[in-house]
Length: 161
Image (tube, rainbow, N blue to C red):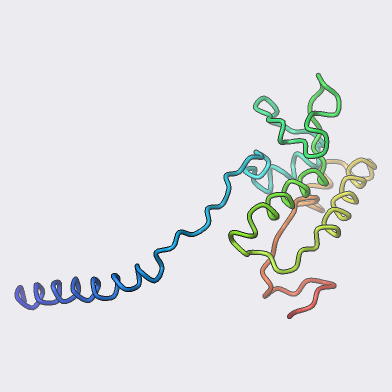
């Protein structure tokens, strides 16, 4: 058993070297590096974003960076708690997709204008007061949170290529 085991270990090492060496020459080029995340909104969970969109406020605003506010670069009313709108969150995600997609080629159908339109509708629904925060949480738990799905899923109004 010991000799057979050693033989197969040596054989395995030789085969790995023979296969690895030519493949490493073929694939030696460096891949593109995805740029680092600059906006802290991208690091928040979907449930946290949904909670903040429903309330209209950033709940953890102590460590805010200017990058939170894609349109103006600063809170709308200095000195007051910063507001968070679904349209702002969606715009941050769109900016990130455009920044990294050339490196990772992850999106096929970019419906950015539709996403922004739906985000503004979500903001209007939250601002209307038609629903309380609790009702929105129960009936529309992820209202205003951007989502990306694989092409294998059927999406209303979209075609399969």
